[in-house]
Length: 379
Image (cartoon, rainbow, N blue to C red):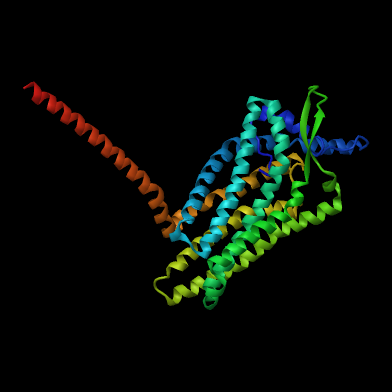
């Protein structure tokens, strides 16, 4: 979403154009005719951007957000059970919280998108106040999730490749400290994102009404600061985690292969490791396109042209999928998680259904007994 998911192409097109006047291929008046050609070439991708935004924003986002929010809440409930307490599940518990925060933020923005179809002035005001903070939450949650997955990978590496050091490195107390540290440090490092945009109350010369517009702050207009901080964040959020995960995943897979050669039946911890390998691989697949956009091409979002923003909609959809899909992976690969989930939710529902059925049966028996008593009295 890079926090510009939207729908209804005609409803929000004007607002999008107003917001992008400052950024999207807006060239100085004194530029030559070549600049005008560049402007026209840039805007030829506007239909692609609007279509991508409509499909992702009003079709995929609500479905994935509702599914992901429900799944992460269930994951938090299951992993908070006493039977599920372990160092690995402590990291996964924290990861579910981070993913849930991102999904809630995305869903909140989707609600603003829907509001544009009902009350455009109110939606414009809500968008103006929401975007600067949502941009921070979006990037902070991505950094937190990335380093929590790195923490899980490090722990699995110790389990598989250095089993003699498991007791020292892999315990619940250390996992809680690491998870809390990741949350605090990554949230602090992302603070400049909270100062990237500001909301201004401007007069729209076309409609003659005042609108709330999101513009880049003076701090982020400083090219030196922008370049340094953007590369720093790209390193922390994408490049370093990707390199570490690729190396650790390779070591873990080699370790599992060696274990399977000498053991006919792999222990339970190796099954959990296989599940975590899948989590890591999904993360790698989903975050790599965003990493390429940010590092190789050096592209942002609001400041870019319509082609880049359209592609951003697709890469951000992958980030949303990554935040929503872990619950499915746990259910498929982790038998302990699945059994605990069924015990908490499925059995509870079945028990309630049985209790309701028993109540109805008792009611029917009471009615039958009453009718039989009335018939006996009449005789």
